Structures are given as structure tokens and as C-alpha cells.
Length: 414
Image (cartoon, rainbow, N blue to C red; front, side, top):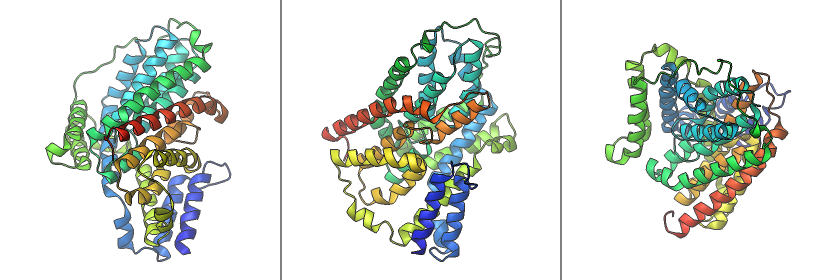
């Protein structure tokens, strides 16, 4: 009963932290839950440490350091300005935003992509006389959709990719079609719902968008490292190194050869997110140790067929709105470990990520965009996000079901 009480209180805290009268945020709730699992004897300190998935934390830390190096070298900002500067109409700008955000999110952690891109997008839109809102919504949803395609696209995919043992290339090959077609659904939905805003002509610009200074894309160590790390991911079975070690090796090179001080790079790392993950691992580990998931593993009918795919998509759609998609994914890991099915693992990756587009609180990337926009006086309301998210999520979920079902029928997934 002790483990159950801690588990319920922790995930309630994770779910309710967005309400104004709740003081604890999600990382604090996870941290306190982890400490409680040890204090009340559910886990020993050694068992608590063993419950943490260090491979996932290592991969996330390595990618954060590499991304921080890219930011310190100005690559992310320069590429974003270069992309925005190519737009010749509002519709073309929309397409460029979706493509850039989606592709960048596929190979970098999507939360970091929107953190850098959102201010630049707001400044650009305002300088050209455009309403930033539809482009910000498209950016947030494109980051989630693009992140679906790879293990490094978002934190929940890192969890699933490392727990399942699916190769980086295999993960990409199976979910890339879902990401590409879902991106088309996103573009079509924005064009339909915001057709008036997207009919406005681009203004001449006032110089604030940064076009007066051509982006500097000189080759620096961080860019070379990123390319080599991605190649290492794709070829990791031939390279002979696990994915987390490849990321950490790249991070070490960035720290040693980068143009910025390691202290400045470390300052860009989201240590709170790593703490959040660690706390969740311990809480869920305590629940598993106490047998709380035994009933779910035996009772939940997640079968290796279309009905199992559909059940995972339904669960993801509902639970991702309650606790966000990362905690939901951690919650589902013990259930799917007993199945050991690539079909179900990829279904969870696709569904948990795409479900994040339904509401403003469904994914961390959405909240980052909303908070960044608020600093510029732009309010992204729950209803405004849901109006577009309902169309995009419905379409992308159906696409995910269709693609995964077809791949399973063709024998590409077991």
C-alpha cells in the first residue's frame, strides 16, 4: 500500500502541477516521490540507483551538450534565419517552418529546437506584418511530428529506442512515413483554419529579423561532431558502440574542441529534465518492485495486431493529456517489456508523440512555445491550440495506425 500511495501521489503531482494553486512542479514531484520510495523502505538506496535507466540519461545528456555547442557556435540561429529568409509568401513561410522544425527535431531533441527557433520566428513574423500565431502553432506541432521519426527526436523516443533494442536506422525507416504524411496533414490543417492570415502579403521587413547580416555557417567542431554522431547512430551496429556512448563521445569532443568554454556549454544543459527523468525511473521502479504492474501486464490486452496498436493509440491519446507524454511513456515501459514486440514499441513511440499535439499540455515542446510566445505578448490559449490540434492529431493518429498496420501486415514488424 505504501508503494501505491507514493506512486499515485507522485503522478497526481505530475498531472496537476499546471494548476495555479499547486506549488510543486513536475520535476519536484518526481524527486520527492523517488525520495519517498527510499525513505519508506519500498526500495533500498542501491535498488533506487539500479532503477534509473542510465543509458537514457546518458543519451539525453550527450545530445544536450552537442546541441548546446551548436547554439554557442551560432549554428541553430543562423540556420533558422537562413530558412526564414527564403520565404516569399506567408504560405511558403508556413511550409518552411514545418520542414525546418520537423527535420531539426528529428535529429536534435525537439524541445531544444523550439526553444531556439520560437523567438526568431516571432521577430520575423512581426517584422513582415504577419500574425505569428498560426506559425507558432505549426512550429510546436511540427516539432512533435518530426520528433516521431527517430530515437533522438524526443525524450520518450530515447526511452523506447534504448529499452526496445531497435536500431536507429530501423526506427527511422519504420516511422519516417508517419512523420512525413502527418506533416502534410499539419500544413493542410493550418492552411484551412488560418486561410485569412496566410493570404496576407509579406511586408518588406524592418531589419529586426536579422536578414541584414548573412548567416555565418563556417564549419566548426560542433557541426562536424553532429554529423559524425548521427552517422554513428545509423551505423552503430557496425561501429560496435552503443548509442549512448556515441552521444557522450561526441559531447566530449565538443567540450574539448569547441569554441566556447565548457562552463558555458554546461549552463545550457537542462539538468532539471535529467533530474525529472531520474525521479520518474525510481518511482516507477518502486511500483514494479512492489508488484503494482503485475495486474496490468497480465490483464491489459495489448496484443501484437491491429487491436493492440489501436489500444496503445487510445491510451496514449488520453493519458498523454493527463500527465504529458514523457511520464506516460515511463509508465508504459514495464507493460511493454513483457511483450518484447517491435510493433508495440514503435506504436507507443508514434502514438505517445503524436498525442502530444492534441492539447497545449500534451507535450513539453508545446509549453515551451507558449511560454516563449508569452514573453513577446502573444497568448496561445488552450482552446486555440485544441482547435488546430484536434484536426492534426486525428489525422496523424489515423496515419500512424495505417502505416504501422501495413508494416505489420507486410512482415516488417513483429
